[in-house]
Image (cartoon, rainbow, N blue to C red; front, side, top):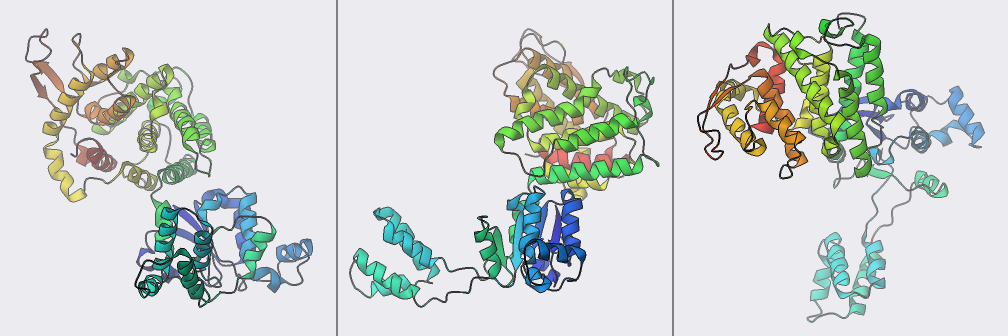
Length: 491
C-alpha cells in the first residue's frame, strides 16, 4: 500500500515500531501537495492529511489564486485550514473518502457520553437503555455504576438520567477546530479524524486495517508490474521469442504494442475505489477474460521442454490456455476471488514476458495476497517430500473429478472432463481451486498407473511416479512454490 502523507511538521515516530511496514511519500508543502493530487493521485492507495499546513511556502501563485477565488484575506488564513482545501481536491479527483484520514494536532476526540445521554433519554426500550447505560458507564470509568450502587436499590429511570446529567456537566467541552466548520458549511460528512495526541486510537492500527486489503494490494501490484514492464521494454525486457509474430505458437500477431495495450486495458478495469460485491464479480470476470483471451490459438507443444526454465514457461502457457478455455465457455470466474486473480496475473506475466529469474518486486507484493508462505528455511525439506504430498493431492483430485467412465488419469483431462460434463456435485469453488493444482502437476507431471479393474471404481489403487521439478534452480519459482504450497498442500 502506497501512502501520500501531507504534513508540514513531519515525525515518523507517529508510526511507532510500524514505520518500516508502510511505504509513504512525504509532502510537506501545500502547493506541492496540491500539484501531486492533481497530477499523480492514482499512484497512491491512502492519504494521511494534516489540517494545519502553516509551515508551507505561502507566496505561491496557487495560494494567491485560491485566496482570491474564495475571498480569503491572507495566505496564513488559508493554510491554517489547508488540509480542508486539499481534501476537496482529493474528492474532485475521485479519491475514495474512506481512504483519507485527517491526522491533526488541533483536534480532541469528543467524549461520547453527551450523545449517549441524549439517546438514553429518548429511548423507551428497556434492553436498549441497559445497553446505552453500559456504554456510558464504560466511558465514565465506572463512575456512573458506583453512584447508582450508592442508592442501595434498583434505580428509577429518572434517577439514572439525573446522575448521568450531573456527570456530563463535569466534562470538558473541547473547542471545535475551525476546519470542522468548513465541512459543516459545505454539507460534507466529516472524514475520519485521528488526533496526534490520542492514546486510544493510533495511526498504525488504523492504517493496518487497509494494508492487507486484497483489492488494494492487487491494484497496486498490477500498477507496479505495468510500470516495470513499460519502463524496461526498451531495454533488456521483451516478449518471449515464442510469442512473437510468425513464431508458430501464436497464429495471430502479438507484439510489444499489443502487450502495452493489454496492460493499459487491465489498469482501466481496476478503479481506485474498491468495487462493491456485485461490481466485484464483473471486474474479476473481465480481469481474467482480458488476461486470457489472446491465448486462444496457442499450441504449447511447439515450446521445447528444456531447459527447466523453458519448461516452467511452457507450463504457465498451458495454465493460461486452460484459463482462456474456461473463461470462453462458462461463467465460472464469476465466483473467483482476488487471490485467484493474482495467481493468474503472476502466471500470465511470466508466460508472456522475458523477466529475469529473480523474483521481481511486484511479484513479492502480489504473492502476499495468496496468504502466508511456507518459510524459506522449511522449504528445502518440503521440496524433498513433495512427491508424496502431490500423490495424496492427486488421489483427492481423482476422488473429486472422476466418474465410472474415467479412462484418462492425467490431472488436466480429469478436471476438464468433469467441467465439460457439468458435474453438479462439484462446486465452482472446487474447480477454481484446481487451477492452483496445475502449478504443481504441469511442472512435475505424474505418471499414473491404476492398479485395479477399471470397472471397479471403488478400488482406487494407483502407482504414481514423478520427475520432481528442481524449483531451487529458479529463484522466482521457489517463492511461487512457497506461497502456493501453503494454499494447496498445507493442512
